[in-house]
Image (cartoon, rainbow, N blue to C red; front, side):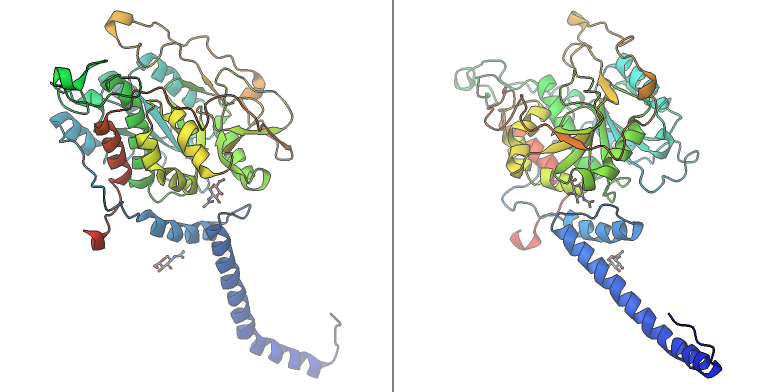
Length: 442
Ligand SMILES: *[C@@H]1O[C@H](CO)[C@@H](O)[C@H](O)[C@H]1NC(C)=O
Ligand SMILES: *[C@@H]1O[C@H](CO)[C@@H](O)[C@H](O)[C@H]1NC(C)=O
């Protein structure tokens, strides 16, 4: 711009500026409003700009609050079992605020929520909690421990956590809380390969002729109850739209896991727009990673996976497929029915070295069975190199996409164990219990 020495010119310009100022402000506001509108409509289309600002996030939140009021299928009425005294008292505990909130009063923008789901392997849980205590950034997180059943020793271990905000939730409809009624075992239930008509017993066999076993169905019920409760039920998380990281009681978490997860979450929109999630470890649970200088996109794994509310909505919309597929493992159900129904490969982004490791040798169906004690304290299962102690993913790395992979996929018919209509209905009830029934259809 040319400068003028003329005082009258300057005077004129000053006046012009003072008159232009409100006009200028109006234009700026209009442009801001327009870009906000455009971003919102881009988001409607499922594409998100690389770095969302706090204002974008606030606007997006309004959008998802509307989405949260999901209308039930009018032909389905959610029905939950009558609770026991124990399950009612646990449901009350679920409403308690997180512990350690005074010590960690504010969770920073961009933090992750972490959900650790557990059953009854205290030796394992101790190891996992110990690993979490050394995770860089864990003090920024809210840790939610979701229990399948009530086991005092597990409760005590979680109560001992001092390194971050922590909240416990207990699945109030866990088969483990119902000693003599559904979802536990009911008198008159068929067992194994009983013929219902001959034996006059209750239940629908699975595709292989076997009847339900509460200990076996409890895992899929717990996972589904937890997902629905964390995303759509709990006050601490139901307005949270960003990534929630899910880990399990036999996943050893490396010190760099939290910072690596944040890096992956930040890099995902730009580096791998087709990725639905991020993972802390390869989908092959025994693999340690390739050690390449690149990120890797591959099929979703089940060790340390994190996704946001948009992805949860897509999963939740497939509740019927999830709940009716005759397969008792939640992860195989996802690979064989839910992900294939999305219409595109469901990739997850991860680093070239794992930040979490599965260490358990005892299966969930063994560890606590007195007749079949599986002794394994997990010690020595995981060795850490120096490079695993600090964030080790580089933003300028390319992404290597693994397109063809072995494993469960569309077409797999399931291992069974999930043929009883009562389990399928309870599962569907979990999907709808926090949502509204269409008043017009009532
Ligand atoms: C969210 O919606 C409410 C009610 O419609 C409105 O008053 C508020 O300004 C909106 N907030 C944002 C950040 O868009
Ligand atoms: C959530 O993640 C998906 C998959 O990465 C992405 O397409 C979507 O835009 C994200 N949603 C928000 C609100 O950031």
